[in-house]
Amino acid sequence: MIYLVLLAASVAIIFYVYKLFKAAGWITSPKIEVTESPSYIDKALTIFYKYNIGPYSNVSNLMLDAAKMGEGKGKSFGIYYSNPQTVPTHLLQSAAGVIIEESDETYEKDLLEAGYEKMILPKARIFIFIQFQI
Image (spheres, rainbow, N blue to C red):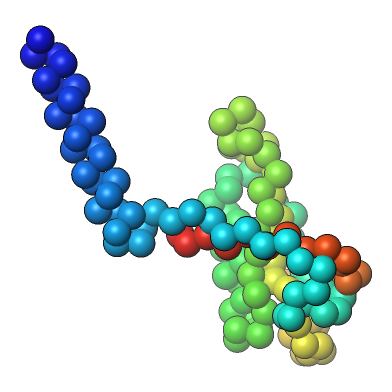
């Protein structure tokens, strides 16, 4: 009987904490949007990235380094390919870098010299945007 009381109390506490976090905005549902013509991506995208094999903790450093070089001119991104629950840490695969919206020869040169690879993605026809709060 005491176990049922403890279980009920635990569930009540967890539910209360969940409600507090949700009210504070820490738990939000993702916003999903499918569109053919987003207002802020109307052309091909130029990205600079580095491929990473190893701990995912290295990815944030790659994103920060690329962003610092451009003094805020690019938007950082990270792509995580491996499942860290099934792949050993030293074999995790990822990529990180920046998306450059406006051409800047100096910034692009700095990124290339720092070992980032350049890729131009053609304009897409359909976009799926997922926004979530961290």
